[in-house]
Each structure stands twice: as structure tokens, then as C-alpha cells.
Amino acid sequence: MNEIVTGIGFPIVVGVVNFVANKVYTQFTGDERSFFWKKKIHLIDHFDSRTDLEELKKRLKIVVIDDHDIFPVQPFTDAGYSIERWNTVKDYSKLESGAYDIIVLDIFDVAQHLSEDDGLGVLDSLKKKNPAQIIIAYSGHSFDLSKQRFWDLADEKIVKPSSFLRIKDVMDNVVNQRFTLKRYWEVVLDTLEEYNVDEKAIGKIETLFVNALSTGRELNWGKVAEIVHNQQLIIKLMPVGNLITKNFRKK
Image (cartoon, rainbow, N blue to C red; front, side, top):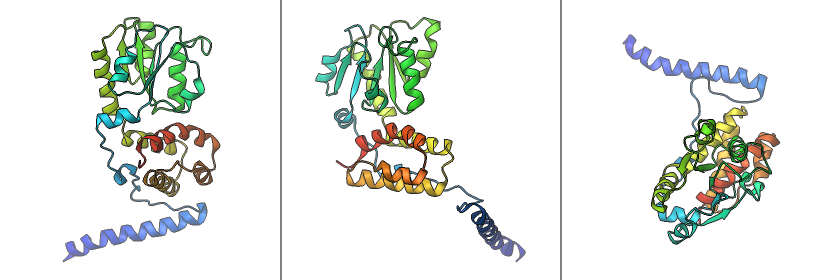
């Protein structure tokens, strides 16, 4: 009998303690918190994110940045990819805003007008601003240890020269493995936690994303700003948030 009482009593005690603790916490902070469990926010649960490769190709925008005209752009276009090539970084703001889903980037002679570290400087800056941005390192300097950081920061690497089929294998794998709603949403959650956004606010932001994806509309960043009251956080969220709504919303 004691075992039964104990078994029933524990969840009741937990509930009472949590209720009292939450009331005290709310009185002093104006917020709510559970002291025995953490609310899980899973945007992915609302949507079936499994999309086949052919459908993903139609959504993706890829830019190749290389001073040498050796990347097989036309074969990729023929294979269904939307791809363009720049000799140098001609519009950094487009890269920074998440206008391209995948960036294929050389390390030399592509960004000397922007950084003394050339392509590495661009890669480093983009990853700091938007960790979810998919960047493929594309260079012939694979054995240069001084350039190891360039390879380490990138999501994938391709050594020049490589055949179309070799590059396509890498590209297809990146699309299948990294171009997912789950991955992008985890970056959003990590960023919100980094800025100490509470669970209640995260839930409200998730609802805004769900509504945008369900209706096929753009995310209302004004409403997000009303929730977090942090312009720096909004700036950091926008690239990955725009990637989510652009590529995974209802068509």
C-alpha cells in the first residue's frame, strides 16, 4: 500500500512544487518557467520535410564564385539546377542575406577587394552571420596546411579540377543531407537560446513560422521583433529565417 501511495504521491508533489516555484518565479520576473522539464519546440513536427532531390533542385539557388571558368555550370543547368557563376564576389549583400542556398567558393582572387584573407575572409564572415548557410570550399590548394581553416569552416569541399560527376555527387549529397527544415530550425533555436530568449517567446516565434509556412506567406519580421525586442538578434535570424520560408513554405 505504501508503494502505491508513494507512486501516486511523487507526481503530485512534483506538480505542487513546480506550481509554487513557478508562482514565485513569475512574481519576481513576470515570466513562467517549468522547474522539472523543458518545453520542446519542434517546428519539424508540423511539416513533412521529406522532399525528393528533383523537387529540391527546382527550389535551390546556387552561386559559384571562382576566378577560373572551369566549373561545369552548363551540365548542372542541364541536370535541373539553378546555378550562376561570378568571377569575384560582386554582391556581398546578396550572399549575406541568404539569397543563395548554396555558395561554391574559391579561396584565391575572388574577394581581395573585401578582405585581406580573400575567400577565407568571406567564408568566415558568412558563417559567423549565418551558420546555416551552406558553403562548399572549391580550390586546388588541398594540401596547403596554411589554408586548412578554409576547408574546416566549409560544409563540404571539392578539389579542383574535378569532373562534373564527381562534383554532382558532392552537390547531391549536400542537398540531401543539409538542405533540411530540421537543420535550419535547429539553427534558429540555437540562436534564440544564445540570446537567452525564454520558452514562451520561442513558442510564439514558432507559431509565426508555422503560420508563414502553412499559408505560403513571408514571415512577419515585425511581429518577431515585437516578441524579442532585440534588433541584433533579428538581424542574425533573418538569413536563416528567410531560407526557411522561401524553401519550405506551402507552394
